[in-house]
Image (spheres, rainbow, N blue to C red):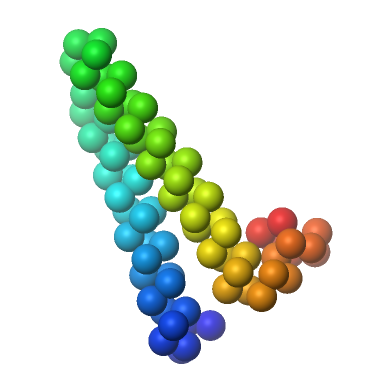
Length: 77
């Protein structure tokens, strides 16, 4: 699958989204001992990014596999 340039670009976009969400979680963990407002803002931002990244990655993965991942026989279902 990765030998097709268009798919490789989509996979790199998915990796960027995943790393951005991961960084937000690490940042939120760094503010765990901060005041409540700062901590909550960072936790909510990380939660938002994780949700968006997870949805994007799941949708793109299904799309790249030609929709076959929607069946029960495959792991993405």
